[in-house]
Length: 267
Image 1 (cartoon, rainbow, N blue to C red):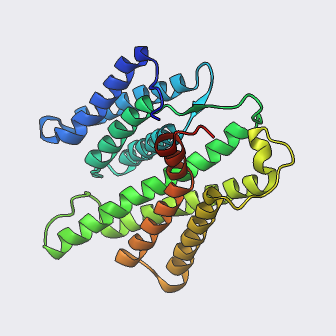
Image 2 (spheres, rainbow, N blue to C red):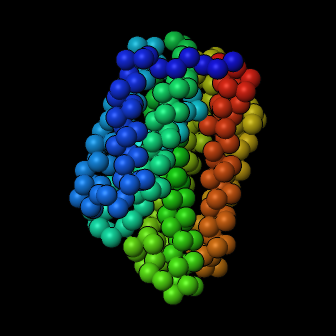
């Protein structure tokens, strides 16, 4: 069963956000740096409005809005970074990510939230989605590390516009921030459990979502320890980061995708 899309009157807003994301990503030669930044800021604002619309009326949430919020956080991190590192070049990655997730959130807006859900649930979501956003930003930077290493081997200027060591430091800052937020999310889930969703007699259940979340936490913990104790960097660190991010993606967005789209079940 395919879920109904968002209200049709929101289509122009989402369409403008997609266009503002797509132009800097797919027509970079036609835009100078200032024009591209302005378009990305416009896309960032329109994206935020489209997310707020999803929260109007009966609150709906699912895998696509989760990915959309994650992409919005990545764009936020990128726009802040460009204020400190003007030479940073990742417009194709962030523009493509933003455009795709806006479309997905409009087509698959998720399922209505039960009225019995706890008032603390939005905070739990905020922690989890912020962790998603930090790790997604780390993945984008890891991708830039791979591209830069490839360019260095070919004796070319790095495509990212930043030195390799700077990219590595930024990547692990995002990983560290994401790890702290993921830890807080798991602790909140362990303490309050299903009470967050309005169900009584909360207790810990070893469902697939929690299993994947804990596996991702262990993977990121190993990455941080490996970096600190054995100096992991380059391809090894990037591979471990990708594995952890993949497990984290499966923990919520992946499981919700299966329930909402492949199985067609709201719960």
